[in-house]
Image (cartoon, rainbow, N blue to C red; front, side, top):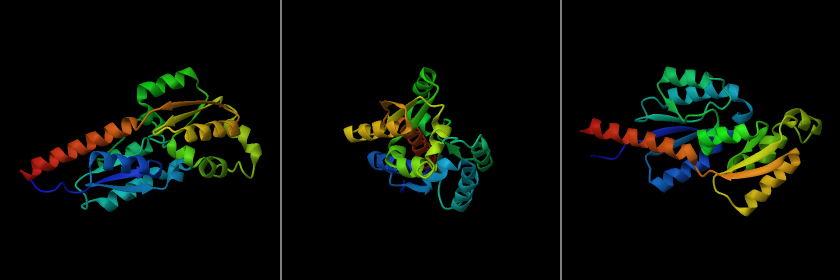
Length: 209
């Protein structure tokens, strides 16, 4: 049996650090990661077409393709693209759900509907993606328009540190929200990539035999 052919993970840029960490931890050198810009969080309507372009450009170059996106606000349009292309993605509505796990996320949502979530990536880039990205720095009057219906900020931590907790508290204060955090680790991102890698490896071995 020869080396496993390269397989492609098309990912949200907000997940790049986590996916590369999982690739290193699990010794998956055959996984190639290509990321779309993380600021598509603020423009989800563009995600389906850009993912389609990535998939079609990769055809014939990789043994298999997986998409490391949840629905991410596309309203089912991403799933339509993936069904047409025959490519799977991470289950869930958004990254908050697959990091926390569907069951835990549903419990969190039921406890307080008006919750704004941050991951490690969104916390690190809070100013760029939230404050400046949403124009709040230049137009502070937008803050109550965007966040007036929220009551709490919940930080879903992949790798927790006191510094990150402090940054989360500061972010919550800036938005006028209560603060809470939960340590989720890599959640269903890890299990989804493990299943994808296992299926790719199995199909490769069968084909080579």
